[in-house]
Amino acid sequence: MDNWDEIRTAFQVARMGTVSGAADVLGVHHATVIRHIDSLEGRLGAKLFQRHARGYTPTEAGMDLMQVAQATDDQLTQLSGRIKGRGDDVSGELVITTLTAVSGLLVPALTEFQRENPKIIIRLLTGERLFRLEYGEAHVAFRLGSAPDQPDNVVQPFVPQNFGLYACPKYIEAHGMPETVEDFATHNFITHDNKDNRAPFYRWLRQNVPEERIVFTATDDTVLQDSILNGLGIGFFPVWEAAKHPNLVLVKAPLPEWAVSTWLVTHVDLHRTPKVQAFLKYIKDVAKTWDHV
Image (cartoon, rainbow, N blue to C red):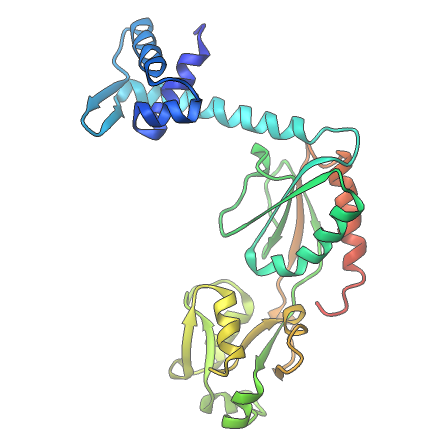
């Protein structure tokens, strides 16, 4: 195939579903999109799309072409990410990904790192989606739980996250302080809405607290923490987050089995670049000063 512009155009039409949508993404006139599709179909001798009132839907031949185009687009994205990471100095974009629950611990360190390296632009990507280092979506990932096992990644242990059971003074004044796990049967508890959540501390709570004593659940850790701070019941805080709320009452100190392993993950192709190495050294040194994690 000697015209990748046409394949790129067809890929965007399939992705967006309309000529106008593809034209906006590509920054071209809609007539150019139609011309590319017509030319490509003529070149291949097959219809790539079914035209209808709502837009364009790929035919079977179109789907085959889209798979090749998607693979090519992924490879180009991967290449772009790797090239961007190969600067000779500590500059340019540094893309970091982690869960939202850990971002509050990292942001102060990221802020200071950027101050020390003003040529760096930090992008912090948070959320449940697993950003793919092998496709250049991020330079460094903070992963929680079991050690990642992707073969092309460099995985290093980082600071474990410890969790304790806390309540606010208003709750303790109203309900008293549970002295033992057996006392939990007369107290209110807050936990994650997903009963299959793999966090060890949430599993422990479900195993040790009667179901009827769980009075509030949510899918967002920030919401769960807010409900504890408002006196709704007893629940888990990461130790570093609890330190921000000196009035919180520690109901049960962190147990070793509640700790969550944390990992620093980089792709082998970017691991030795100056900015990644500079950041890894910095964050490890900063973590040694954390006495509240």
